[in-house]
Image (tube, rainbow, N blue to C red; front, top):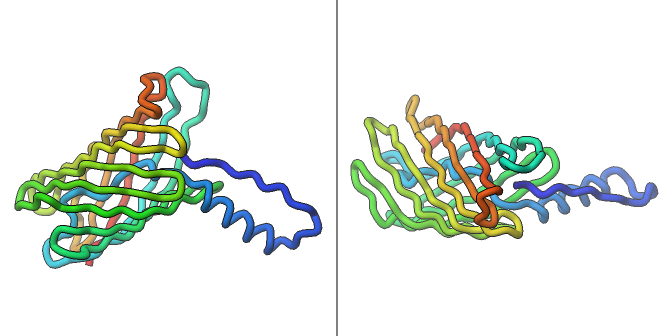
Length: 201
């Protein structure tokens, strides 16, 4: 989840200084993105870079009185080589921003199946994911990316399942559902639902 920030400042500070302090503070208090949205299938044939954006809804925990949360995310990915993919990932809401990097090794890449391993790191989170994907037809892929890592200060495990569908040229629509267990506790189970769009060139 995204950490919240409240800044108290003397009234003598000018508004631009307050705004700058708020932006820096929120960037430092971000935590992990709440969806993956980047299938192991990687780039479509003839393309080597992708930009995407999505929205994620996080359900409340089963046994806790809390409200659902909505966050946005954006990413930029590029193939550094035939087997290495690099990504810049951001997650945000009205109160906070998280920024991080991901490096994926595409160990397996076939016409109908892709799989690999990815390391992620950002301020407030680290994770190891095991992404894999299977092609149904055209550039329509079903994918998953089991995730072991942190959400803020807590350890977490997540199991997303998603679908990526090419709709036209380099554009793809993506939908994803994930169940996560923060701190590996059954009562911390949450459901993540995400929708996004990506463009490859």
